[in-house]
Length: 306
Ligand SMILES: [Cu+2]
View: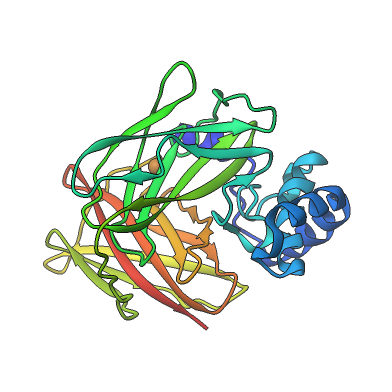
């Protein structure tokens, strides 16, 4: 709780989201023109120019101008207005470098990586975010095999975590962290060789069960608008008491089908409730994690956004 408050003190505004986003778009755009160009060049044709400019301008512009109060929407990272991150291996002058881009199937082995600055130096200072300095999300490109890990950093800045990938395929590795007060989500691919049988995305649903728990999702997701995602956990029809997990009642990762864009999501401190802004219509996979009865449970939903 304290860690979360400290790390998110200037990012926790939930009210006035629409206004904030509009304002952010304008100030970010005006303040961050240089950054926009740089980011647009760096990111190339990955997104439409306007979309991209908005997103980059918000993160860089707000940070450059020290305009923290305007930066309430999404934690001030490079998600910016749209809250989209995780599409690039480099952002904000930082690059995610995997020690090895290929992993063996079905065997636990350390995944090692570094965050490297523009000057080539390994970053060793990270902010506490959701009680950890590094959050690592690993998921196969078909959105199966989700893992949320917390690597350890060695003195030289190398992060390491034991990782086991059960099936061959291309995996997306997201390093989610905050550096110098700016949240970043950098991502790269990790290959597991072998015959791949891709899984279709499960159909949209509002109920999922895990470990004998029933989780019900209440959401009305519209692209471009702030969306309230609330979850109720019950066992045999009775509410289940939740313990704090990573400084909140739960942790949610939302990934867009197709490009696996990583949405920044704000947790509620007191309830299993999150604020998200889906940048476009389509399907998203929501990975919810919460702690009950002494252990962390992970459950996933497919969310259709109109
Ligand atoms: Cu984490």
